[in-house]
Length: 124
Image 1 (cartoon, one colour):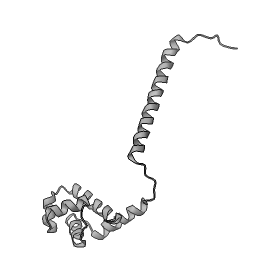
Image 2 (cartoon, helix red, strand yellow):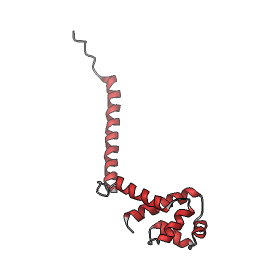
Image 3 (cartoon, rainbow, N blue to C red):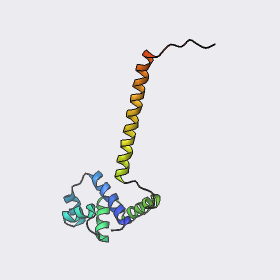
Image 4 (cartoon, rainbow, N blue to C red):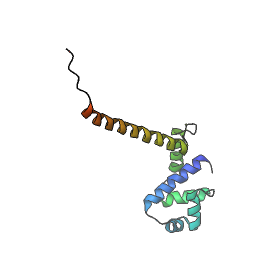
């Protein structure tokens, strides 16, 4: 499955989730087995053009517009954009949490330190 097909199936899956239909109802409208719908939305099988068209129309969508929307979305977010792996996000979150803890500690020391701070006369 290429990126355009994956994105287009994602658009159909989103429309399906918004539709309130069951997979069985959608399968009946398209004329395929429920497992075909399940596997199509899971991305575990290639989709025939006739199935893609049937799913789109059953959801009230234009197959051509779905494909165009998928292509436009991929052009807007090219695959060469740097994406950080989950471990980087986790490391960043740990760093942020540590910085927040340090700031809270420093703020608490300032509050307690104000009571004990020596009083200096004002310099004229």
